[in-house]
Length: 242
Length: 320
Image 1 (cartoon, rainbow over the protein chains, first blue to last red):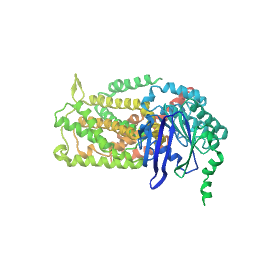
Image 2: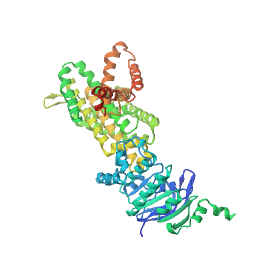
Image 3: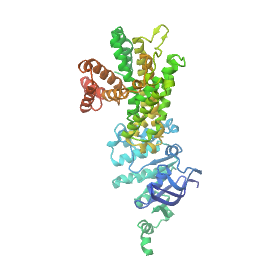
Image 4: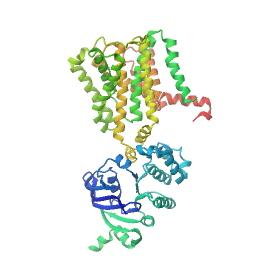
């Protein structure tokens, strides 16, 4: 399978605090790649660095085979990467419908916006019911669906989803995961950042475990040994070394 | 009432009813022209302050640059007045490009930085004596011309010119607001980071709003120069062009298209007709009180307050 996105020895961080330490991984087209890992491991920083929201110090971001390291965020979006950010980042003072239309801001998406809007409403009937309400009035689950719908309005080739389960009730998490599974079945390329290991593994094709700014495990999702994964997740391997 | 009927009624009122009613009274029409001049800056200011989300204390700079560009083109370059006014708008837009480093700052820091920029342009106008005539100013700037038998140089003619500039500015405001860019600008108030995530080049968008706002303000400044036929740096770059416009816009409701204009007319006429006779010195201090009261009773300004009153009268069915 073709590699849609490749990260080569990426270093990135905030000011003098470096978070990613020569991190490398690759994302295959048409697959759901899951990036797991504990808090502060660099998962969100990785997504932000891909999108050009965090400047990188070293290494390369290759998208569709070309070097896009530190490209402006808006260029990455118009080239087909949609980020569904941590904490949803919906526009609280705007209606649900206007939020979705914001997803169609890139010039190439505007012509198809009405068609895509219908597609999003079909996928999330709740958003259609609430289309004229302010996004600030939505529940956490609805806001997550709005953020996902907004991302789909961007007609993405690659969807980066950052902790969609954060702060949601278990039954809503199942709903969100079902939607991601459906998008995967449609053949979309998805990168899912999660802490909810069990649920993420069920829908993933490939799994990376990121800890301390490095990849410590890369495996096909169906061959992952949960016990070993959890050992790595909680750094028990480091304990055993001593 | 649909928006088309409202707009038509407003245009008929402004272009036909007002001239018929007070057109022969040069004092009143002169007051209205001055109010519209403030109104034009107020609309331009609101464009940046509302859609762009940037509070500017520096619009006097664009007003002054526009005034000087048009005055010099007509006086020294022999240009006809109307093309010179358009180029004056462009000149102010170019001046706004020089203030763009201030866009890196936000909120009060932007406001203060652009205030400093405005001062730079005033000093330039004072010191570039061979070009601008320095502090002595420019005299006998050509008046607005006669076109097809219409004397735009008269008070009433001037009224039609400034009215047209203001109407065009409001139309531009309306069109920008309902475009994809207007939506993006609105979203930027919520979260600039999130707008970047959905693919908006927020820096360029803010810069464009500054350019458009400066262009309109420059046109208004140019109009004023040809209307009063005289310029000096302390007048052209006076802080009142900024402050009166801000008071008008906020008083009228700077988040609406009509608010800045209505605010300017009300604020200016009340100031000149009611407060000036009572308090010849320092009458503008009352405007501060007026603005404070408005913010207390209706933070959205005069227009939203009137709209709320009207819709209550029409009954709850029209409340939306």
